[in-house]
Length: 363
Ligand code: PEP
Ligand code: MN
Image (tube, rainbow, N blue to C red; front, side):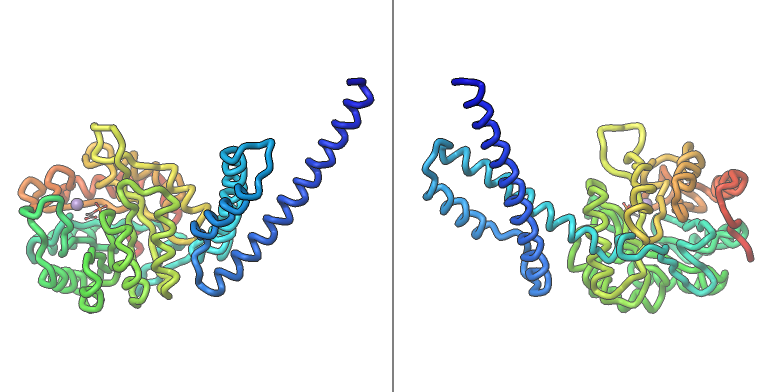
């Protein structure tokens, strides 16, 4: 073969590359159009039956020199890239995405703004155990200027034999105590049927890590008219977390707070691993307020201040911490709850850090 022949062939190849490039992009544009049509009609984007049929047709008409397996492989790559393209469009259009809404979502509950200029602390016992227990904690919160009281009344426990919470009675206790001290309350709900009842007692519904992908609960919370604190699942990616929030927002409830609470890793010195990178990523990707639960992410008391500082420095709108008047007798999470003195030390440690753009405890 002469050099001239080689040049001619190479030129042909380059022309074909350009044609392929144009065709691939023409195909991609059509795929995007199909995505739009499917979106309007509410049809799922991925259609494996149709993909199989297209592959079968291509293989049937394949005259080589590529063998059928290679043709299948190449086209599967094209199909996958097309689906990714549609997925990108979906992500851009998520209601929770900052691309959809540039300004921060600020949730107002009476005089408290969540996700506003001030950082907030949510604190309280793991579980509501008695009126006296919650009242002792609420008093400490009030003293420290912390405005949001937490306490589980429906506890999703790993063992069915462990304390499951006081149920509605626990929510009543939270309401009575919060009314006395002028606090707002957050408590976990695990059953969609309890949402309306819970809204009569508490200000924020918590959906816990174990229920982050309980889609029926997410949908029901999306239809409720009450702010939702959504915790990240213990093995969930940030993307899955945002999709879970989207379930709620897409049903009409835009008042969602995201909470990083640590993920499962091989590390044994902490109960979970606090994924601090999730904080700036969530703030970047979404306009929703972001909180960090330093108690469940670490499962220990001695590193709470530095972890909370890290969270606030990374852009979190606030932190959550567990407090119990007598942690050693707590019916759940005994080893990780702060006592009242430790709680005051914790709050003072954060106040001193200068990380609160506006001091908590303005009252
Ligand atoms: C809780 O906050 O009480 C709780 C159970 O946390 P998580 O769902 O993050 O485990
Ligand atoms: Mn707990």
